[in-house]
Image (cartoon, rainbow, N blue to C red):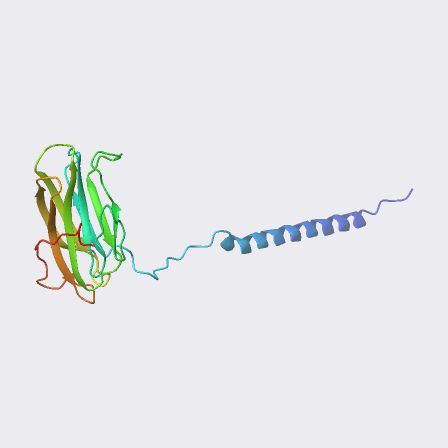
Amino acid sequence: MHGIDFADNNDDSTVFRDVIMLALLGFVTIVILLLPHINPPTVAEATTDPPGNVLVEVRWPDEFDSDVDLWVQAPGDLPVGYSNTGGDVFNLLRDDLGHSKDVTNVNYEVAYSRGTPAGEYTVNLHLYRNNAGRFPIPVTVQVSLKNRKKGPPAKIALEQVEMRRIGEEQTIVRFALDDEGNLVPGSVHHLPRGLRTAR
């Protein structure tokens, strides 16, 4: 009767176990090395200036079914309003029609500029429609200037006006910025200047 050589069998199982452990260790190492590449951390890039250097906001009572239109003009650019929503400098981002096609029931219009070219800026209001039939319509206009060198937006003007008839256009504020994008001292005034026909 031949005896069984347990030593050879034990050596085979040890080698098999070592190979499996090395394979598992190699797999874990690969996973650890790949983890940073599966979802790399995002790096914020601040290579361009944020949009919206000049911000013009218009607000009137939400219960008024009225279409008050914002018109703005930057130096050397065409007037921007409901019929021309984008120029070289300004964009009208929200053209509010009162209660028509409005799921928010908030009467609000807003325009932003891209940059601050030097020269005079004009902000006007125009009463296009008034289904509410109530006059006058109280309107609040706020103009802010964001200069990245000086932190948060600075208020240039906060005006409260009344629109009294359909077709009326009012100049709310005119102001000038210098080459550095700063408000020119003493440049804020309210002399009327039509924008809807100035094309």
